[in-house]
Image (cartoon, rainbow, N blue to C red):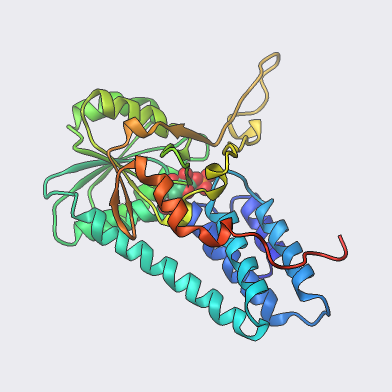
Length: 304
Ligand code: RUB
């Protein structure tokens, strides 16, 4: 699929979830580079990257993927680009599996896990744990788009016991079902360890903190934000009011898609490099995104 179609599908949320955005963007740039017949590849490639990056805000996996591939396109011969993008995709697939293996060790037989939204990384972890342990999952509906239904269906198909609850039942459910752990994915980890994830995550984490329930974030280092290291704020996507419900006369509506969970409400972040405290986010960014921090060597876009 070409980058323009991919960007449209990301905008409409046909393609969604932070990791899926990264895979879709990488694949579309690979296809574009292979099919390119023009005479200013770097300039045209960068335009495709910009298009993809503008398709959705908040999940940093998207700009990180695009920026890394643009960096590769400037640093390496074009004939090698598709292979390098494949290597990047394989690395992310491996990271997902590795996180699942590491995070699954934190889940004990008999545990009841609460999750929110629909995170591939959290679900891969649950599926990995369920291979050898008996676990129950409580998942939220995740209004307004109800991504929790996808989570519930996925788990039910895998024959992992799952109970779907409405978002406002979280506190009651934590007590009633004796939830042992909260396990979520992430869209972006900021340099201070704050986690941006689906709206409602911060409430769940605050309640878990109050009830002494550990909160585990399962996420690839691709979701750490080098921009926040340089002082930039994470933009929280605001979606259409129509997602909440049709217009109500005289009523204003607000529909943020994500929120921030403070690092103090997160016990651990499980990355492909191992388990870290949220306060180590700064170190991960410094180590992993050196390529992002170095000055750009290429001459960008003659024609804009
Ligand atoms: C999805 C969401 C997920 C993260 C992590 O939001 O918040 O928890 O993206 O997912 P949306 P993954 O449905 O608005 O994209 O682990 O799959 O990257």
